[in-house]
Length: 206
Image (cartoon, rainbow, N blue to C red; front, side):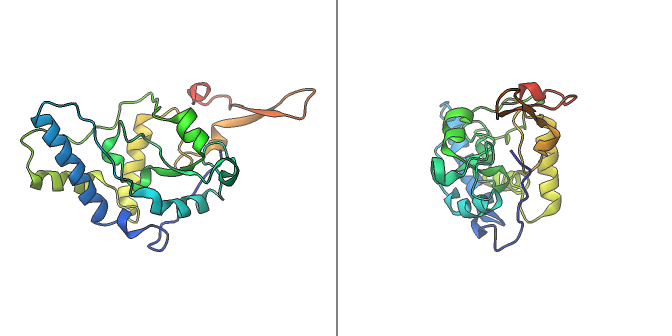
């Protein structure tokens, strides 16, 4: 895993993931939550796939490698748009660009899946109940969806990320070199990844 840098330009980030469009998508999700709460149903949401348009840029930023294991994605599959925080739990981040990275299918589907362990308190979900009005939902969406081209909103999102203290690094926010080190295995030509001494919870990282 290596440090990644997002390219924050209008050419790099699809228009459907900045400005008003992702906010409108969140309003629709919250309306679905409101309807299920009103009907006393389990809040299980459907997520029409809109994120495939981000794949090429995400792969460019990872040099066509998995953001987790660095395997060339064209070797194990073309790669997935990975929801770093799983949409099954963090449903309000399903269409948030800051929550995406490129991953190989093995890491995304077999190893990580819906796992997201942390040592801090979970980011609060939008407060939606049966009486929440559409106008209130629009106000919530204005603050819940960070525009990737607005540095102040991105900074707030990254601060909320650090407060959760996830046990799986996000290479767009953390520097993996400060968390992991290489340990040479004597008598072989192999190395393994180990926790860097002194890093809190590094030995528990997924």
